[in-house]
Length: 72
Image (cartoon, rainbow, N blue to C red; front, side):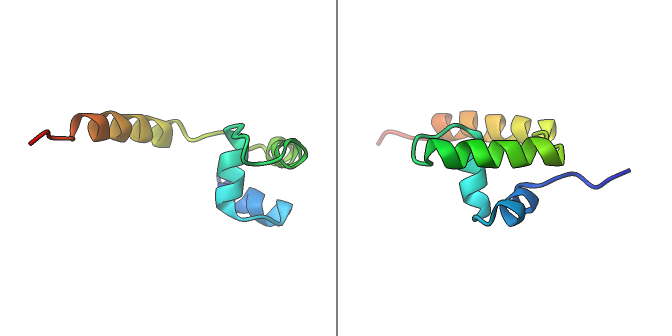
């Protein structure tokens, strides 16, 4: 079984920082459209799929952050 393709793997192939890959894959306008297309094409070619367990963890953490603010 092949190891999972990571954002760092894609970043290395694209010649960018892994945070740029993360932002580009989420269609953030901070990354130019041509760079987003390039990164998405590389990710697809490499067989990248988001890790469902990490996505669930991020969603859980996000809900806990919203509920953790305490008014004094």
